[in-house]
Amino acid sequence: MRLTATSILMLALVAATGCSSMQDGGQMAQRTSSVPAPNTSAQNEVAEQQARGGAAQPVMQNISLQHADASQSAPAVAVARKIIRNATLSLEVEEPAKAMQRVASIAESRGGFVVTSESRQQSGSDGDRAYEVITIEMRVPEAQFDAAINELRGLGSRVIAQKITGQDVTEEYIDLEARLRTQKALETQLLEIMKGARAVEDALSVQRELANVRTEIERLEGRRRFLENQSSLSTLSVTLQPRSPLISTTGFFHSVGSAFGDGVDVAAVVTLGIIRVVLALLPIALFIVLPIVLVARYALRRARRRKAALQAIQTQPAE
Image (cartoon, rainbow, N blue to C red):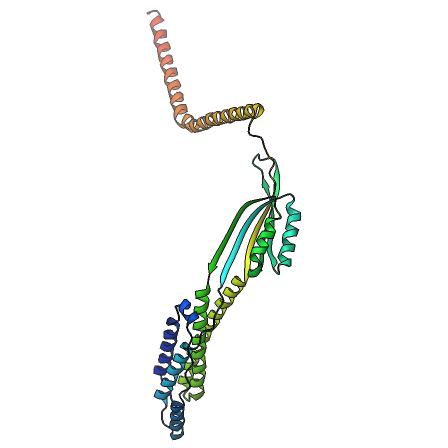
């Protein structure tokens, strides 16, 4: 049996048609159908033609189309919704270091784990006092997401900020499942064709097409594993910072201190402005004013010398 590039091209078109027909994931999750029985008559015809030594290429193309159609009409398994949920919490606690240990305990008790933790020193608003800020990223099972958030909220004396996001990837996941079924059906059919290939060129052509199909299968399976991981484990980012001291913003002394601070700020601004003006005029004085002054002094000195010489000549007695 000698295959040509036409049969391989037909298989590629079948795969592309199968992928495009599965784009509507929402309808596919509810649609069920039955796989048609194999075409035994076509297979018998292939066997008869092989026994006679004839070419069985047209019949094999028909089998390829039938197998691809069967993979497209395979019953779709009901898939639970895949939702990627993430949360960001900023808490005010008494001691961030102890609270960090408590956060790790919550992650472990909920069946999760801590991914990263970061500690940094941050300056206060007055610029004098620095305090420690700790950021922890943890992952917990999606079923424990809400319970973990409620438990984390109880760690702080005050919740500074909270943000919860969700992304529904169910449709993409169902589409990946359908495309995987189509590609695997095409892989099976290519393997059957390769078994019957006798010419080296035909075998190499089928092998190249098979490599492309397997690469696509690996890519789709990798994306499916990523969606399963992200939807099964939720990510929580928790920021812990100490309580800020309360500062009175009313009263006589506060007003005096505020006025004094405003005066210092104004004086600093004026002084800085004078320095900037002097520094801006300094190049002008060096390269423009100074040469003019030197030339003027030289001209005045020369004029005085001439005047003195004339007066000396006029005062001499005539001989």
